Image (cartoon, rainbow, N blue to C red; front, side, top):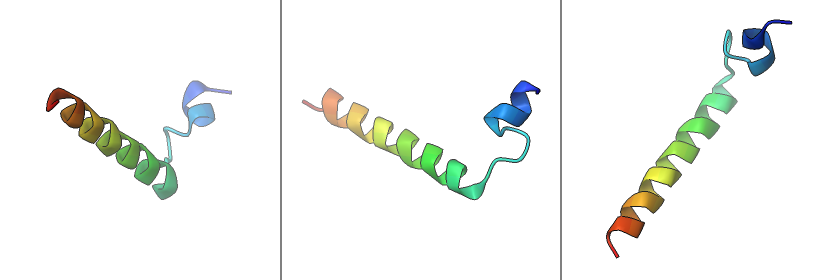
Length: 37
């Protein structure tokens, strides 16, 4: 099996996209909070 099919990069589901965006926003928010100390 190809890597794209295994990782789901060929047809990413909306759920995985939402989770990755949510995690990215959380990391950015935590980073800004840490820098603000």
